[in-house]
Length: 300
Image (cartoon, rainbow, N blue to C red; front, side, top):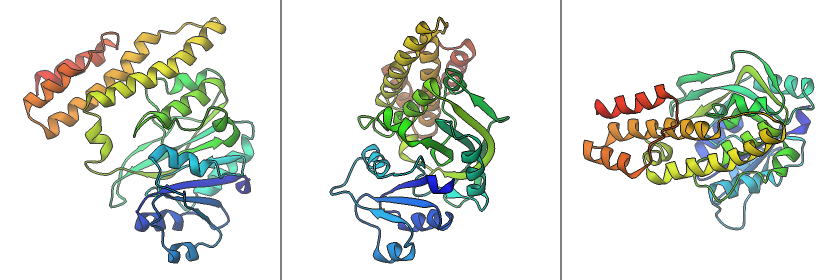
């Protein structure tokens, strides 16, 4: 069923890495490259004649470009890796097997390696076992943190479109987690142990700098308010119980903790405390999480 899959690759001025990911994809796989900014050269286009290269009329913001690419998908399924991610020689065999085995899934999630700029593996995330989760078990699997990464997530195209794809009003964060959680709340999620991709992270990237800000945490609260409104309605309709405020604060607390770690690594004590004083404290998070926050501040 690989003919029913499209890899959607938004790119912006990273031709060297774009070539690396394209080299890791078999030429019989449908590929749509969204050339945001017009940096992809004719040599690259000519090198991959079976792949489609699209260029928006103007430079788009990140999630706008993602949606621009997805709106050109004509297949049942899509994956949307970054232009600096990678696949492995057996990745598409595993994806093909999954698509044939779970045609009714709304989302299929594989494991991934985290790599650095030198392609060295820093860590791995994969499910402890294969899981088929129906509503709302998929949401509960990732209710505190969506640990899966986009190069290893297969979306059913019409399902993703029915939820509006990626919310373009977000910047850098949350739009991907929001879409994934909506699909996993209402649909059928398949989570498989196979590691199929390498998700690249960069030292001192935008995310690591942005996490230690009040604006980042406000975006986290906004994301949680949006998804938890869906969760509240679904659970009440089905006579299920869930502690909404506890989940919201636990998610906030984990992001606050990461912000504290980043501030400690790059700023002085005053900047750290100014940051902490500027944001709210997640009183309804788990006791152990709150204890870790206090401990991190005491040994700053």
